[in-house]
Image (tube, rainbow, N blue to C red; front, side, top):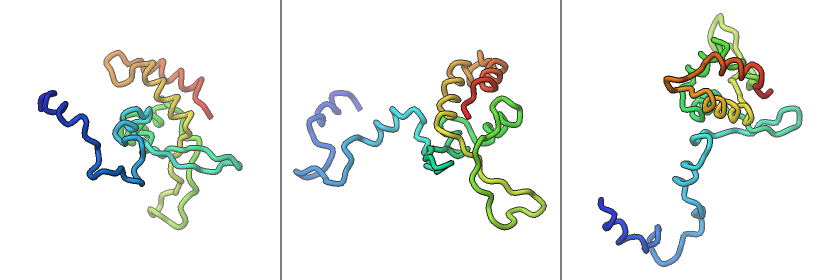
Length: 144
């Protein structure tokens, strides 16, 4: 559509009727997602040693860094990022026969922020990516 057609509707409210809805949030969801540093990744709050900490699962970390969970696991196996510091409790019972069960990987908010900044600094995802320096930087400075 042309801009002239859209300008014609600019003065109209974004809801039908004469009164605004009572239960609608004041900010638009699209705007908050676009301005979100974590690309819409959601966290859960866990209590660790009596302190509430915002934690991201590996799937949500993958959303935040715009990769797939298998990629994050590969980075861990290659030593580019340290293994997950936190895990959920192990599931009760045998999940897969002859395989040891572990909880799901959890990453704290400072760890996710650190990875986002390091990825931007070392240009991961581009042709100029410096994986060696990225691995050295994360080994030295990765938050606990």
